[in-house]
Length: 314
Image 1 (cartoon, rainbow, N blue to C red):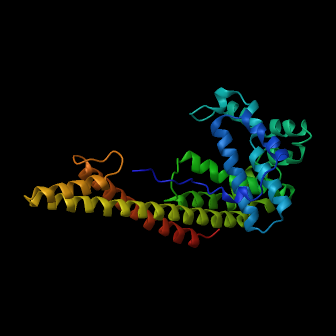
Image 2 (tube, rainbow, N blue to C red; image 1 turned 180 degrees about the horizontal axis):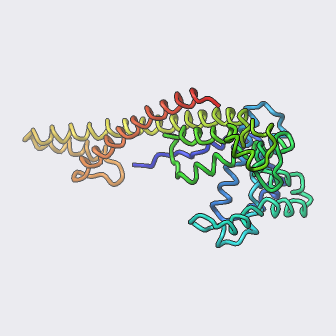
Image 3 (cartoon, one colour; image 1 turned 90 degrees about the vertical axis):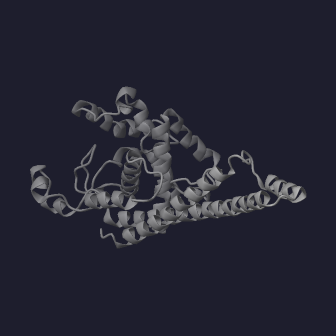
């Protein structure tokens, strides 16, 4: 039984830009990152590009956003490994050190002429519309648009990674959490933080961009459904084949005619696939049937997720 093939992010949209050698050089700086941070950066770059596509932004800006997304966490290559890889919650002091990856990334980009155009993504991707972000506490339109896109993509992938999603079942729970970040914070809390009253009317992330992310997630969920459907077809074909083997076995056991017994046995042998034999094919058949039930249940759950996402209000 081959394994079901499914990538959580459908990266096909990135490929249409045919990243040239110049861009590949710019992205080679990702090799300085650890494997998890590198994968996160690639996911964020992918999501940024797809958000831009839904917004119908021009190709030049879309490619710019993709690369900014790829490079947004490059400053983490300068963060001490014991802090970057710490499984437990960071102390206040460690968190302050972690936050410097924005300014460190900005300096790395500014020091390299080829990376300089993407410095704003590294510096501003943790800024929040209501001014509660870092490193500068910028608000609303003062935050570069590309950084606002990265903020949404970054938060989504961070939650997906933290919760170890391998399927889009229950992905609406993550989107519901992001909706809270798109809403204004408690007024008293904002005032206590010294924010202007006008900033109390906005959340941390852009509701418009979050709505676009919903569309991206729905597309990815549909992509997962298509992958599962393909695998279901594979399972059904093999169940049909093994049931035919079982029918031959039944007929073989019922007849005393040796030539017929040999005929059915030969037929079974011709239908066996790698690793299957007379002793284990019943077990293999049951495994396929069990897998089919699991996948059919997942299909229903995924369609339900799409219905939930479509009803979400930002």
